[in-house]
Length: 236
Image (cartoon, rainbow, N blue to C red; front, side, top):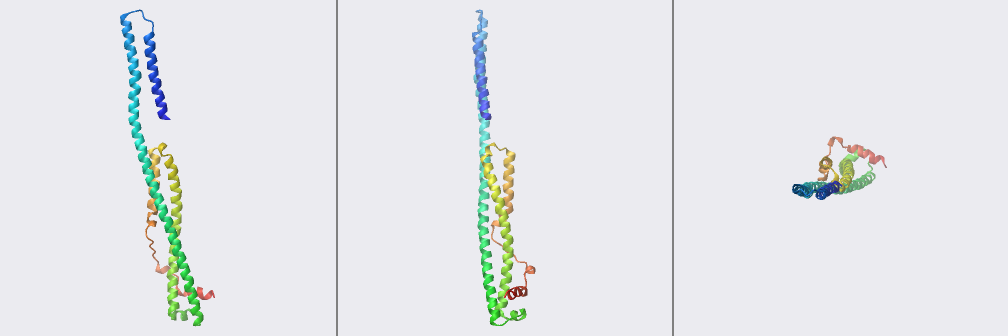
């Protein structure tokens, strides 16, 4: 819009100068040699101003325009790169969510099988107390496995929650960035820098979640084998 306004102003200026030169040339004269010379000089002056000034301003504006366009394209490429980073991280976290959900399902399935095995041995060997159960090597081993697997599930729940929060935040921000990308040509530097900063902050926040799963178990927080036994035996 600004380009059109400037173009119209320049053309009006050129037309005005041309009109002035015509008016001066056709003004009534008295045959005075000096008066004719003055008219010619005035006409030339207006013609030169009318032609040279718009051309000069046009070239100046063209140079500035090229710089502005170049800067805008650079900013657009910058935001496009950030949006790609967001999309890549979102895809990675989404895959990680599936991986975590798969591990949780495997552990849950394994725990049910171990509980079934413990109940079978409980009936087979007529075990009624934890003291008796702890003397049975397979039951004792199964209880220890359940203890570890339940601890892993608890940690995986925490990881799954972080991944869900991360994917939701990334989804919101990438949609915002894609919408802003459509308007980048009318955004100023401050707005573009702010958007890029937001994207960087979120990427740095959730990038560690994209790495390999590292589950650390706090031994002091584990449910005791006796508690697990009581739960399984009491469910009969």
